[in-house]
Length: 291
Image 1 (cartoon, rainbow, N blue to C red):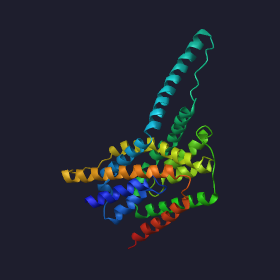
Image 2 (image 1 turned 180 degrees about the horizontal axis):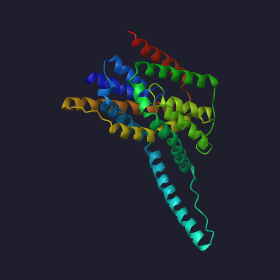
Image 3 (image 1 turned 120 degrees about the vertical axis):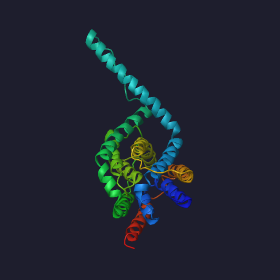
């Protein structure tokens, strides 16, 4: 892999990972156009995801810290409630239990946990099917076209809710988690599907974007460690190592800028433009397979 190819793929990963278009589909499609093969590039793809994962964590570092603190507090309260239950049962007293979900960040933490469950289950069950679909040159293009259709439907439906953390139900979180699980297939955008599901569930657009990005952190971290265990045997040289690290840095910097853009302009950007782009990209990828 040349330095130019690494930079191009790093930019594509950084942009598409945090826009409502599929990063996986774009990487597969562009690698085909550049003459690369996914089998020999698993390590590089993992490093690209590491770059965007770091960017995501840096943007939401304050939120992640608060979520981490609340998660520890919830676990401690659960343990405390279990002890109270045993004590009440042994002594016949009726000591009150601590409220597990209290406050905005505890509710947000619980929502993310609920969303993660279907994501993990779907991702695990569909793992082999995803590998097969990634090897198909047609699947990426079809998936991107399907993402475009979903975005267009959402945009012209004019769904514009106002739900925030407190108003969002666990059912809403479950639906968004299911959509995130389905996005493991190439061409289906994680942000596009989860944000669309959130808007249909009545979430405000700004919160739908923020929550979609936050709920992706456990999924991205989990996918990173899964892919870490599937490294192909690569005879790494100093030059190749530099190329891979460069691609990771480019993906991280690009991703950081794109996240800021999405959060700042989430209420202004129309999804139809991403839909039109998805149609063009999907058609181009499909057409390239016949040339």
